[in-house]
Image 1 (cartoon, one colour):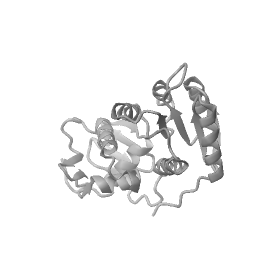
Image 2 (tube, one colour):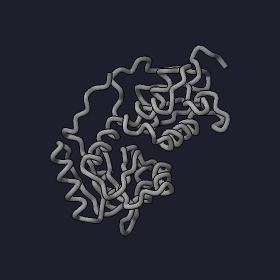
Image 3 (cartoon, rainbow, N blue to C red):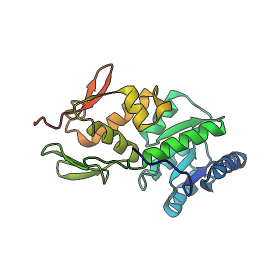
Image 4 (spheres, rainbow, N blue to C red):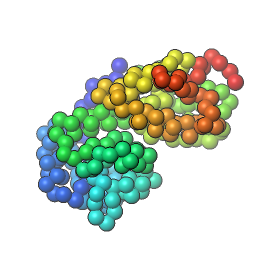
Length: 240
């Protein structure tokens, strides 16, 4: 069982050029026990990530000087900090673009304080290592070794680091190796109960993992698709 989440002391960096929006978010987060730092553009956000080491970013898309997408691209070169993109547009292309650049979630303006707090809590919970790790080092075969405690995989002798959501997805797949996990179960366990219908998140992160650990991502040997049902990690008793 995972430990109970507490927002106390968690630092959220709010990046938005609209001062009223920043103050609205700050007030609601501080009432819940979060600490809040702010930035008014993408350039400043990149520097704040280096200096403040926040636990999570709320990153607006439409900003002067550097938009949220470019800021996210630069941030992902230096940090795996969880990022929620904030925009007035909620269309699928923008959502997918943000996720492909490494965002962990997406929220569209206008949003309620409750929706904002729920999404922040869900993303921060995903960034935490589950308390009950079970098997921490798994030698799948000569090509792939997974160190769940360090969020690392050794692929063909090379170390590959995982982002928090990639780690949680792999954690649940490996700890249920040989068993089919439905889309709904994986979404609930990795993203949270309220994400059960957000199948595009799951598809993207399965693709991310396959690109990192599979010899041939288009013909996977480890993370297998059970069409129309979900995904299954190969049985660890199998060889070859």
